Image 1 (tube, helix red, strand yellow):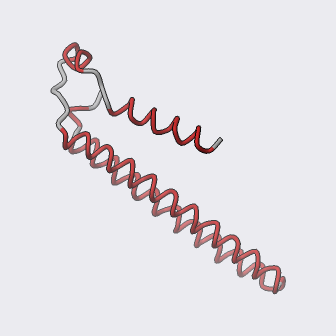
Image 2 (cartoon, helix red, strand yellow; image 1 turned 45 degrees about the vertical axis):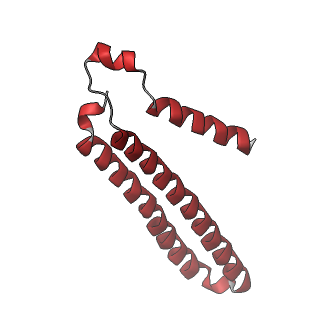
Length: 114
């Protein structure tokens, strides 16, 4: 199941990057340069890698917090508070990568967008 999902995502990413040349002529959009295509590919790869690593970090933090709460239930409120703050900081890193990707795409390559 996971292999089918990953294959589907890769196919959709490739289809969204590779635009037909005839469509560009109709809309009078200049042809995308290889640098433009590579910036999209690298941006997608960076966002995917960041999301995967953040998911691993969050799962490890939750596992450790649950283990510590199980060992010392009296400290559950303190551990839960620190866990929520840590998870928010981990998730903010993924959002920062997404914002950087969007800034690079829309500011640098705005003339190539739809």
